[in-house]
Each structure stands twice: as C-alpha cells, then as structure tokens.
Image 1: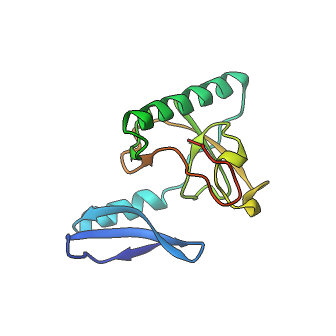
Image 2: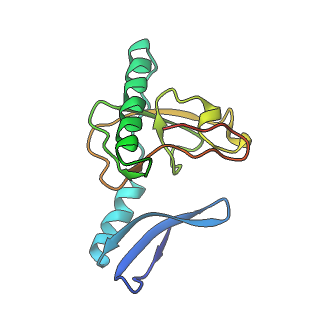
Image 3: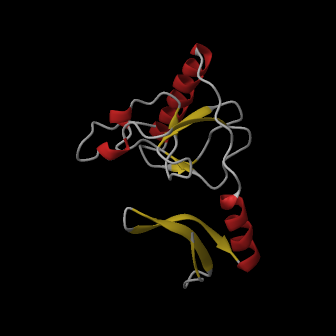
Amino acid sequence: MLVRPPGTDGAWTVGGVSRGQFRPYGHARGEQAATDLVIQLLAPPAHSIPATEELTARGQATGEAILARTRARDGAPGPAGTVPGDVLDVIGTDTGHHLFALGTLFPHRSQPPTDAGGPYTRYQVSAPLSNAQEGVVTPGSTSPAAGR
C-alpha cells in the first residue's frame, strides 16, 4: 500500500501498485482521514459465502441493477449503489481492485487470461460501499467484456 502526500487539491491518495502501475484505492482530506482509509483497507476481507441457486439469482439482480444505474448515467461510472444483500464476487486475490456481480462470466470481466482459474471469492454487501465506484467494464483486448 502506498500513500501519496496531498497534491494541489489537498487530498491524500491511498493506493497500490498493480500490473506495474499505481492504482488509487481512494482519496482523503487530511492526515487522519488518510490514516482511517488505510486502516479500513487493511482490515481482513469479508468471509466468502457459499454458492446457491438463490445466490445466483441475486447476483443476476445485482448485475441488472448496476447496469440500470450505469445506463441512467449515460454509461459513465459513478458511486456504487449496491445495497445490503447484493452479492458480488472476485476472481483473483481477495484484495483485488474489481468486484463483479456474482456470477459474471470470466470473459465479461476484461481480466487478463492469466487470472482465469485463480482464487474465487463471493461476498454479500452488508453496508454501503462508500469508497467504491460502479459501472460496466469496457472491452479489453482479449475479451468481449460488458461485465458489471
């Protein structure tokens, strides 16, 4: 984890290096807010929840809601609108940068082929994701994308 001191806008940037590039996790105004963000990001990840048919349906509903909100923003990403009970998943490390609606097919995630078959973790939203953005993945060079 890296913390960049305030720039001209006065905001601290907290992030990490992924695939050779710095990627911000979030921004904070003031040292205490930056410290709080680091502590939040270093907290143990949520527990994985088992897959069921009901979860698959909830994952589809989560994805449809994300798509509807993104369309309402004319395709632009925006603040996460997930609500408690929505279900998400990640392929790769559970500290990755991108969560998807549970059940999003791998080719629609715009992840590198080397991530296929990696660790798989499911999550249920228990509180608003106030530091997250949501949207639809743009196609990568090796996948059709359209994931949410």
